[in-house]
Length: 164
Image 1 (cartoon, rainbow, N blue to C red):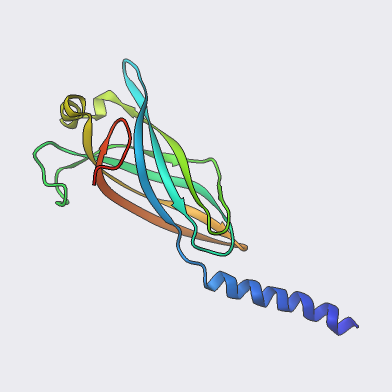
Image 2: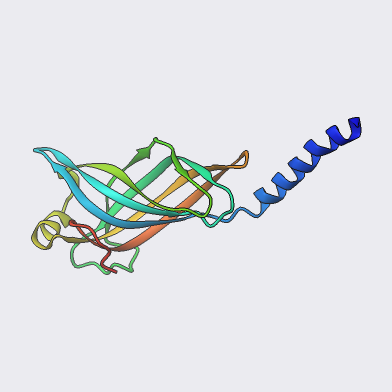
């Protein structure tokens, strides 16, 4: 009888460790951007991130760190040159994603108007901009913690919707 009670927790840990080694990286995509507010010195963009969990277990995403870059007018979007950092920060609220769930999470991103630089006139004139967002998010699942990097380059409209 005693052997059965000691064997059960060992088997549970073994199954859990197998689940952890098969953990697949979640997909994080930028889905759209909306203009939240604009004041005299800056504003807020509402960035919609689509998070897809391909795993059979849920996870908690913590400390989403990001840097948002805008392409300067006249520069090739595929080139590593011509990108100007608009803002960066950390979204500290936990994001809980259930097993095999896809969820859109809205992240407020604050910026200063003085940081828009040469890209400002293009954004104001056309309402569109080329962006690059990079960052990391800490993912906790089944007692483990992993840092998941993300990077996305594309073209967006301030009213939302993916251009490319």
